[in-house]
Length: 415
Image 1 (cartoon, rainbow, N blue to C red):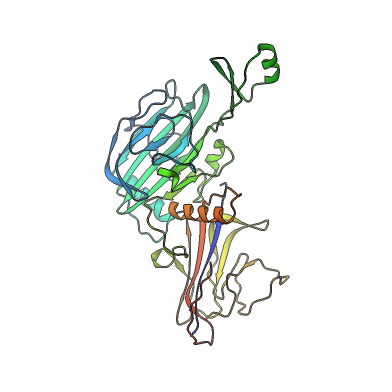
Image 2 (image 1 turned 120 degrees about the horizontal axis):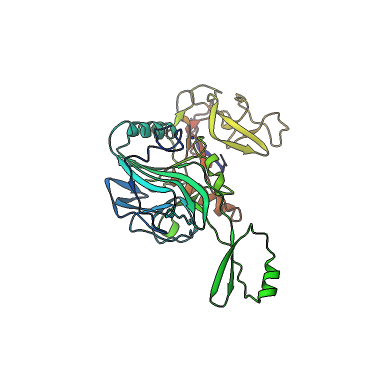
């Protein structure tokens, strides 16, 4: 029989809160507050070195300690006081997990605290969450490290208030990072105005004509617009990195890659990438039925997919080598493109496929950090001017499936 093997990938960025908590976002945040260890109330400060009760694997590196830095991030090899964020896509000199890297000030109000959990109901809640977002892994959490920034203001803006949380989840050889967002105040962009050795900072929202200021006071002016926030993660040399794709930090509470507004979850244990195909098969895939001219059931998408202006929230993987959105397609013979059809279709190889006896057709949705990085890198390679960041991947795979009525054995791949 003639065999086919091919893969279909869909990438998307999408701007899109169940656990226990005694803080403000009780429906989203994991437990914090009573029972936590507080970080010191110092500007640009950090926690002391925290020994993890169980190791945490971060892109192949096994860490036994961490630091909770007041300016919105975790580091592993030492504290980091830097208030102005680096771009996570640039050459970082350390591994970092940054739910909201910005200039925060907890010296007057707000609390920064952390805890570790190795037993009890919260571990089960985390296991349930991870298995919901990464089905078929059969994951059991053994360690939670929970760091929470609760109503912490920005530096020089004490009326602001931002609440967010990062949770390190570890079990066996698997590691995950969960970022939870409550209310996040908008940052004001600033301009630096300098005369001789003196500097002052003006918020961009101030109603002032800088040219008139310069003319009257004879300032030498350096206008520098700062990048005030970064949300995501990065590794040494930025080999693996991800920045949450939102236009403003105050939109984080309404964004997600797991269809839970305010929550982002990434698998971060890492591992080698193999070949041209993205991962498929095994317990992580859902299998399409073995039927001639069959189709998968409707698959709810974790994130909406925009296809030439139309927004779809479900998809069908059809056995004869195509994907459709509004209904399954059983037609075994392909139309020519353009076909002036009444149905939107993506067809990596539309032909008469027969998987009743041999071959498998399967699919998965992933928010695995390593795969998101790979997808982002590959899309930017092919479309270098897009500054693309994948937050979700849908993968459908036809593996060694024969043509109907043809016994000649060949191999063919498509991605």
